[in-house]
Amino acid sequence: MSQMGCGYGKVMPEGSKVGYVSVVRSLVAFTRVDRDETEKKPEKRKMFWFGANTKNREQKERRLSQNMRDTGHRLKTKTYKDKFDPRVTARYDIKALIGRGSFSRVVRVEHKGTHQPFAIKMMEVEFPEGREVCTTELTVLKRVSHPNIVHMVEVFQFPHRVYMVLELATGGELLDRVVSKGHFTERDATKAIKMVLAAISYLHSLGITHRDLKPENLLYYHPGSNSRLLVTDFGLAIDSTSVDTSWSLRTTCGTAEYMAPEMVQRKPYWSAVDLWAMGVISFIVLSGSMPFEDDSRTKLYRAIMRGKYSYSGDPWPCVSNLAKDFISGLLRVDPSSRLTAEQAQQHPWVASEAATSSCTNLHRPISHNLRQRASRDSSRCHSGGGGHGSARGRRERRIHLKVCNTRYLIQVNKG
Ligand code: ATP
Image (cartoon, rainbow, N blue to C red; front, top):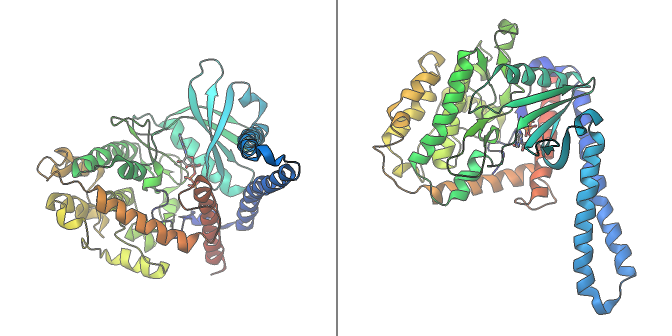
């Protein structure tokens, strides 16, 4: 259930305006690899059918598709392996590609000595934008240590690529779990929100603002019900101890639907922007819909600046007033009256884990709303190929979104 608020993708800091064309180039390069891989397959299939013995066609077809899958997997793994520096592959076995970001690929690996699984985030740092994002992420990950923040085990730094070895999160994204659970109550929501708030509170105590909190960046460590929830993706974070905040904390960045009003208005801001994002996340987790959304970015920003959202439609009539009070405390336009991370943790709805709320199962309306939104996004963002739910569909959609995002950046540059 990725990409809530995918309509606009990520907005990079304005400081990254230089060299947008290179972003396009790197995106095209990434996309081309995919196309090359998929284009090879029909050719192979054709060769087989010309030489096939019709008697055992079914059996052979099955064998062939298995072979093709194996070969495809081997080729893919080989392609990624080839891109890895031998000093990395000397220590880690590359197992599979997990996903990709604007400047990164994330793969599942196994430590050769201990056989322990990890994730390696490989970042291209050839171009200034990638370098900027990578430096930011490294600075933060080197400083932090918290059970609800993804842990960096080690890092390999080379001139064109950086490899961050991270703890592997296998439990999926926050919203995927909400949907897959089959049963979801306010109590479940508070458990997840509590963990994210603990991470935010810790980050803010260190002077770090995440600036891109959204459900896709919240991953469960393992599939079990007692799993830790991890905050990931610190590419847009700001560490006030290591940067000139007089400039950085004026920068508009993040993902449009989660941006705080002060950021949208280009006013100086501080860590309260993370709490606004937390309000948006809580709204989504409890309802499967967005508090602020519009096909027009101007209208979306206007709605955010007004701070006008509504608790209408399902499942809101079943949601407790205490939960709504919590969200309202976070979605306050004036950042100085917004709940801080600590206050949010102490809010009775969170602190009591919704003890006084009803145990109504919100799963059906939430999943319904999420599905509806995903198909709206899909028809808006994804123009063809790969079913929406399929891995390929998700991957292509992700790439397409990056392209949408880049277009936006170019428009800003021209404007
Ligand atoms: P962008 O760079 O544009 O923000 P992104 O956040 O998707 O995109 P990454 O943070 O590089 O980019 O993540 C790419 C994919 O890898 C995502 O699907 C993410 O969920 C997954 N991922 C990232 N870190 C881990 C990890 N430690 N364990 C498991 N999966 C991870």
